[in-house]
Image (cartoon, rainbow over all chains, first blue to last red; front, side, top):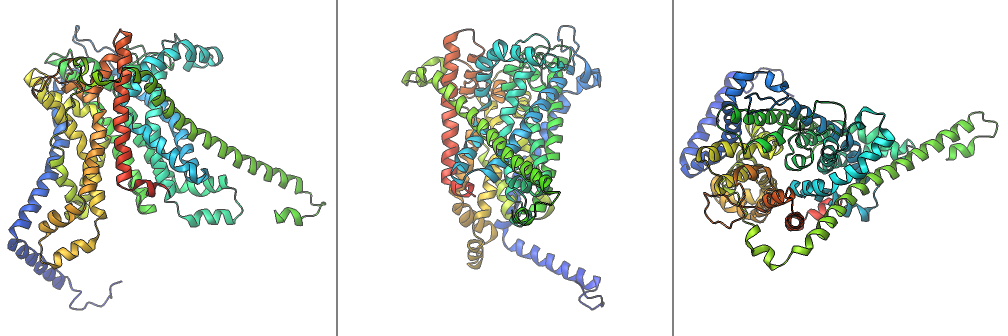
Length: 337
Length: 280
């Protein structure tokens, strides 16, 4: 917009002088109001505390797990034994279990939640919309120990008696449904995780779909598209980035979920296989199961390294998700997720 | 439809076009049915879950339930989270430019970190050196967990305060800090309280961090430096109990917890007028 003529106002010298004058006057104003200055410092201090906590968590976990990192190195990631008696520690099965259950949950939850979100924003009769949305949102508020309680005492026994034998009988040729049905295990954990991350992905998908401009839909309808075609070709492509962000956010939640998973996964390491019936561990369930016995030394630091790993994994997934959602927010405008 | 009406019978593509139309309308109907089915599945699961827990849990709910020793529901509260609201004020009032968005990003990321990490943090810092579970360490863990919820909720509310009020205050000669503390924050007070309630509801159901910090005990205790019980811990322990009666009591505990959490979030939504906004 600037005029290419080098006037006095435009010259770099003048501008820097103006900037200097402005900042000097600002400092003078601030000096005149010491209360304002102190308040500002106080606020920065609060922000500093939050920063220190975040960095502190990372630092404490890193420094406390340093002995294990030094002693086992990368073998810690693959070693199947978490064995304080023989003083050898590893989280191989836990890493596998964490990713296996989360991947299963995401595969199931994404179509379910996106479908739910589509129904709630596009198809649902107005009168039904609020109660349905409220129910799905409330699912997110159920404490995980309550879901775990139901999963351990009701769902897992049902799986053992009815669900898993049925799957084995009808789909037993697939590698996923082989082995002994224990009830507790990867399948139970994955299904419970599905229920727990569904509300998050649904909520974010809904917010994303709501910001798709009406003009896009109307343009599609004007071309003679059915309502499904409007969603398929106008709404979903527009919201793809945001929905992906929501799914990754759900993945982060699934990776870190502790109590409900600990209750239903069996907490027994079996050699990793594709079977959903096998029992297993996750990183968080290793922590819950082992911290009580952890004696200071390598054992303690091994437990803490599991925590450090979990922190790193969830941080990465969350940062990725937030970046995607933020990008969506810039595209769509006014999206808060 | 007018296209079909205009086309003559001799049009060789008519059958094909009708087939396409039919397929499109079937796919459309199917998508409505399928997505509706998904939505209803998700809602029915919640209704079933609450119904089951209520049916199992109601039998033990009576006056004794809340007072008798085996499950004194002492909840450790996050004592110092409110102090950190300062960062929310920062985000909405002072913070501009890249640093503010970095802090906001940080707070958002904090939401996604599994709560057990915070438990681990408090455990290493307080429980391990002092060789004892304590209510204080539980409070610290829950306090940290509350920060992002409270901070973001407060930020949203502060943003809703009309700029006119800030300008009016400034026009009267108030300094920035005065404007914030005496005009903006009071105007947003109810919203801030709402945010704190929401965070409280969130931590009330936390189990993993408390397991590592508060420890859990069947005895009633008011000493902050000793083990203390919390409803989620009792539910967790009773779930793994071999006794049927204790398992049934776990359902009662879960019912109390769910009712508390759901009522809080309902009240919060009602108070913030969320009902209206959700109706879009």
